[in-house]
Length: 98
Image (cartoon, rainbow, N blue to C red; front, side, top):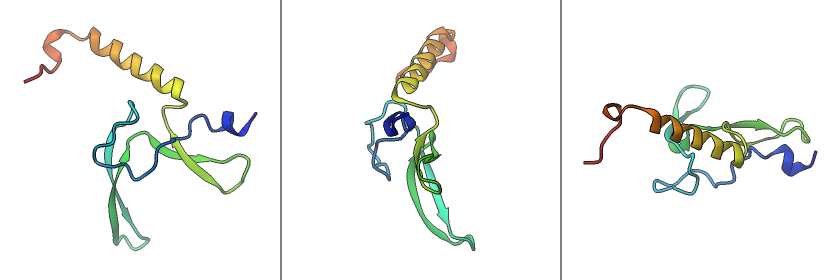
């Protein structure tokens, strides 16, 4: 398995995410409030609900930014599944534009 195949779930986008970030169609913004070991605030950053930590199997003790939805292909499948689900909802359960 190549290094690229092993990290197909890597998030390729720079962090922290800017307020107007729209490069990833699966991006779901949320705030991350960091604290130190004594629970003192270190700051708040914009992150993605799907961003997790992946373990680098080739370099023990090293980590990388991992998308919980998987590879780009798996993220697309997830979006299509969500779209199909939304289209199957009765009209009264969907939000209409103002």
